[in-house]
Length: 476
Image (tube, rainbow, N blue to C red):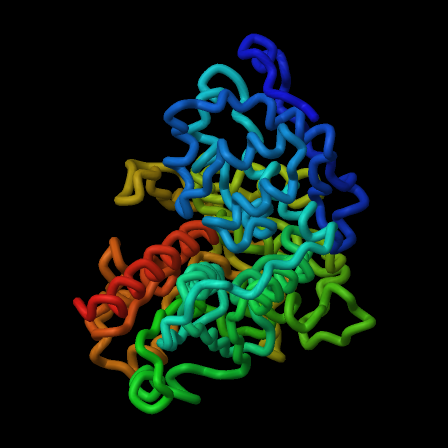
């Protein structure tokens, strides 16, 4: 069994490099890019932890994982114990270890990172979660005394799953309603297989089912049931709305209705849920990317997911068009790095102003304009300003718009007493996630707009605490 090194010895250990698929090979397959740390690497990297008396890394974790506690168990080679420790606060560690932006959260506050590279907290979380899955360990049904009260969770994405996990451990009867045929929300329809394998999500969901959470698919709240019907007719004492932000935004430029112009949501959903990545085994209803010129507009993680997916589907040219510079891109540095390694072309300081089609209303080219950076806007990033006389025509077969998402209005239309803001997002207080309607809570992207998996999970945990307090005291 390994032990923590002396402080001076720890500083001599380099951050471990996670193995990954060769870029020239992975650019044409949908197998996972990152291969995970080895046992030896995991122990070595965990030994770099200083076991701080006041662990600042935990301040950067939206779900409050006991980071130094699980790292200590990794050093002791108690990997199952480490996984159990994480799951006290995080029901989806195998997911978070893959897709959370640890570099701007827990690892950004790691004390080791002040002089050296931070401890690989995210990679170590993934390692112990995968170890538990590989060992075939499954959780027991929740042993918490039953409260005799039912809670409905609307949406099976990260916010909904996080809330459900906490509530089932408090003794509530929890039912998660999902509109689609597969569980996981954005984890299954939005994130590609090469970044987050669907089997990982299914195993995490299966574990929650074994804990006692009930799941119902193909149920659209606002159509199959309204919120009022859930509470007044179906017997739910509280409802947590976690439907995400699945309504795509477009650029409102001429030609967006042409065949061949997609939102990133539609493109990724068709590929992920209809298995276009296994063509021709699955004949997915999506325009074939093979040999085509594909342009993706945006600079976030979803844009990177879309362009890297197009590359894997055989695009002749897969390019990101972004109206600011690379420094302003909100995508994770790792995703940008991976995209470049795989051959994705970056056309920065460029934006389309019109899509052009043929006589059959199918996209064949676009008119673009070059930009330069001006003064900072409300986001703190420098505002892109069009350059005069810089327009040009670029041939393109498929255009994918990835500039953000809004809220689906179905909930607000069928529950008008739930207050929303001018963007259609549900208004909820930050501490307990309460809405304007008694007994109804909301969190995740439906409240904040598009954000990260881990922030949505943090909102789910807050909602669980708020729901518990409400059902115990009756206070609103």
